[in-house]
Length: 434
Image (cartoon, rainbow, N blue to C red; front, side, top):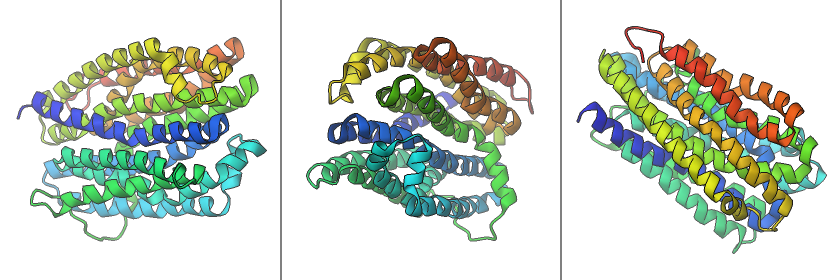
């Protein structure tokens, strides 16, 4: 199969897979909006940055380690055999900190992220439960990443889609027939990655498996090498958490809890949209790493160009859907029929989503830089879009334009990052250039 055929297979499967991961957050929001109304959405939105941090660390370790595995395997380097165990060990070690916080001080987390006493009452149990499942959220990045890089993207897709469907079914079961409310939503979200990990594990018993689970002395150096290649994945995940945290604090001052609930609607749809572009990046990465590792520069560049074209087309389609159907998207999460929430969300989602025209280019570009061992350039581009630019524009434009400025911060940050990413891609490194 040529580069184009492999690209079509990997990217289509990984878009479905990445969307599947994000859908269970969307399902949580929908069922919580029915059970708890605007207060439930506000509580969920306030703790979304914790999800983002957990997902970001898991993706950095998982995708970075799997990328390192693919490059070393293509070169015939036996160090590839230590990547899987090293990734699992450090993910489990880091998870302990999140488990401790969730077990002993979840109320402080909700308060720190801007919750008042009413929101703390709604969100504390939810926060406690989902943080106890941190190891499985992280493993849900490591296992599919290694399976995908070992030539089995269909298994990774099956795991994440089954996980997502299970989460939706469990959400309904726990929240309504069993009457568990927010606790049920958290429990459903925690169980779902366990299902994905189990399905992905079947690949390791197949004849085609080349991933080795070899217990060795854990190596911070190997972890650092892997994380350097996973930095773009980290920032792709953490950017939503950084954006959500900054926006929540700004919006509370500008529009109160209703404004935060409106942003919660936008943030959840944005998470699904971002997952589409992460899927393109995840599908491209194993191919780019393999071609790069074997010295096939022509095919690596072809995959990059295909990915950039795919991202642009999908960004335009997503933006068109949002512009046309904004009232319908908002109504799904406005069970109380709040006119104020609808007004904020409908205008905000149309402005905010223009940023994905540039975000798709940036996510694909930073993924390519990481897959070709250009960790420094990938870090600069990723940290710019994930933190520096979005925070700076949010404060500046909110001060100048109020809520409209808050919505404009994301497109402005992605446009600036696109210029930097393009510059990085046009610079040569080991023969690879755009």
